[in-house]
Length: 385
Length: 90
Ligand SMILES: Cc1ncc(COP(=O)(O)O)c(C=O)c1O
Image 1: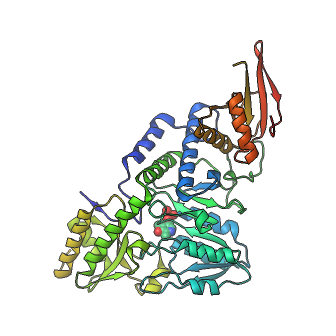
Image 2: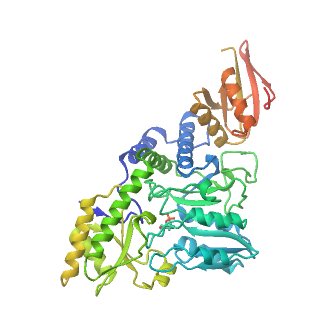
Image 3: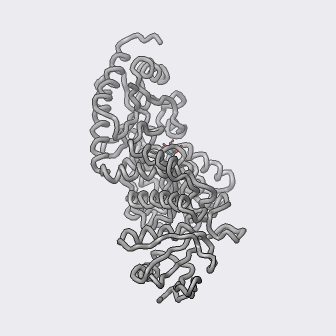
């Protein structure tokens, strides 16, 4: 049996009900959601709506129709940034961003958007809130940051960032790719205007699902247009949500699975999920810290981090470690830069990166024991691969 | 049921939201294809009885659901007669 510890890339396995919901959709429903009047199209539309509703409950969103479905977090981030920002606007972000935020921002910078990156100093790699507030200018339009780092696991304090944004009348956008489903997100409490999430990680949905929540007070210009199943006689894009930002047939079968994943989380309860994640994180951190030659990157305490741990081993490249874990112990980890060059540059782990172990609610303490045993062996031996 | 009501919507998502919201309060509505006697921006309409209509109107006034048109429907012989009614205060 494979020991899967790459949940920050995509979660695996998924709860059985996610598979059942998708199977049911494929076998019994099949219709195009919201396009036709017959009962299979209607059923499909209801399933997609139910998924919006479940996500709204998870993120404390008042109106489910303010959620736009996308293929993933990357697409959601692009829709948000390109739809909101104009040349001359100033954006504040962090040095811990994933390329799905970094690259669209760099692109927009070339088009005349001003960009400031806030440091996240070692050893916790927490966002420097003082520097954040000091960086605000007259033309600052947006604070856009990751919620949980996919490299070191550090979770940023959304409510405090939201408070700063509110005080200065600035929009607040969050990349919740790592945290959605696995860590509480409350758009109302934190004052979030734009929330990008992906379906295939903590939410336990399939790949090809994700979304963007848009505050009802915001009007984004869509980066693409097309059929919506509404106002069909009009050749102009409707101006109401979510249709204005959501054209084309969605991944309805995937969204059926995503809804089941969301329901699974609501039923298990986020506090229960968090409790297990914290226990597993502490087990990994304590175990790895006791092995000579192993250095953990990122020392935020388990309560403020995702269940993922990045580390390097003395005298071994991350890829050697990853290969050993895979081939000798059937343990799946991710090695390298994790799509986050900014983060590794500021951590001093560029360009080799780290070994990243990322867990989910469905991992077990005995799997962690096996990981620790493997790393211990590797730290002692001359390994031949 | 001799008389019933039909609401039309600007978008399918509004129709689905209406159905879901009313169902959560145990109020019966049925989504149907838009009858050919009325025209609408979206292919789905909601059919409801008088009790459901009252709950529906409350949600409209609160702004929770948005409606395009509202009709009362009566059967006359083999024909259905659709009469527009004021969607703010039916
Ligand atoms: C922090 C962060 N943001 C964005 C993404 C992009 O997610 P997706 O590939 O689903 O668009 C990821 C995951 O790869 C991530 O870890």
